[in-house]
Structure formats: structure tokens, C-alpha cells
Image 1 (cartoon, rainbow, N blue to C red):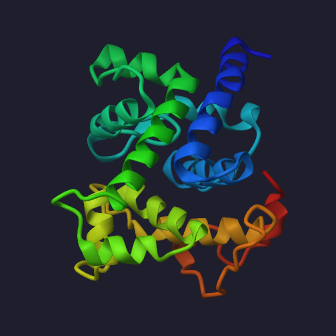
Image 2: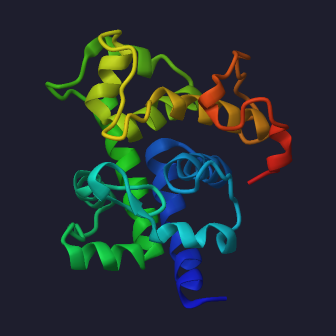
Length: 225
């Protein structure tokens, strides 16, 4: 086992505890979510569940103006809010800080969890930027559906997510013209392939767009988390 591998696996216990306390997700559910986000963000539509196979993607940089880092393509603002919510120091976004971030797999997992919780807290809070109709729709959705919306928010930001749920916008496209709605499609397809992860939640069957990544493929070939 590589040093970073051991460090990441050891520290992931705290990440799982943080996620369960703040989002109500167990380990398998969080693994499915983070692997679904990574599938779209850095892995070229490859769904990986084993550390040895997805470890290289922690070193990815890209996005609009190459301003995003790591397996989950976090930018400066996402890192800051992720660190604040997880309760650790913001690593910053200078060239040196970004290089260190790419080599710290556990830090990426901590900030990704913190950023997701930040978006959840926004959607359930009282920010002046939050659309109340969007909040109501989010709050009246089951946990599986909420995570799909948070996947949209990972790409668009929480304010745009609330606008989307309020019906003010029909989609959001980032600087690379990537549609945030595709993140919901990805989440839906991955939960269909792993129905045991949310056993008490019914997934309404609906057609997936051809951009969903695993459209018309054998979803169950991806196995379990």
C-alpha cells in the first residue's frame, strides 16, 4: 500500500462520520455519490470504485481556464467553503498550494465533503440569495433526490441550484459549456446500477439523455460500491 493510500484510507473514517452527521448518508451512499461526481469531473466517464484505479485522477487539473483541481475539480471558492465547513484551514489556491493539493488525496476528500455540506446548508438555510421556492422543493425531496440536486449544485453553485429548483432557470452551463443537468442524469443512472445502496427509496424510472454517459449500457456491470 502506498503512503498516500494508507493516509487516505485512515483519514476517510472522519470524512464518513462528517458526511453521516451532516447529510445522513452512510459509507456506501457517500461512496456512490463521490464516485458519481468523479465520473463526470475528472475520469472521462469512467466509473471507478477501487482506490488503486482512481488514485491517478486526484492529480487532474482542468475546467474553465484550468482553474480547477483534483478528482472532484474544486476551484478556489469550493476549497474555501469546503475547508470552512469541514473545520480545517483553507489550503489556498496559489500555484504552490494547488500542487500540494493535487498530491494530498485526503485533503481533497475532506474539502469535497465540506463543499457538498456547504451547498446542503445553503439549500436548507436562510441566505438572502436562496430562492424560497427552490428551498421548498429541495426540502420536500427524499435523500436520494436531494443528492441528485446537490450534484447539479456541484457544477452550478448553490445559488444557481436554488434558481433551477425555483423554475427561474432550466439548466446551467459552466465555462466549458458543461450542462449541470447531466450530473443529475449521471446520479440517476448510477443509483439504478446500485439499487441496494438506497433500498428504502424508490427511483422513478425516467428516460436518460444520451449525454448521461452510461446511456443504454448494462448499468449493473458497474457492480457495487
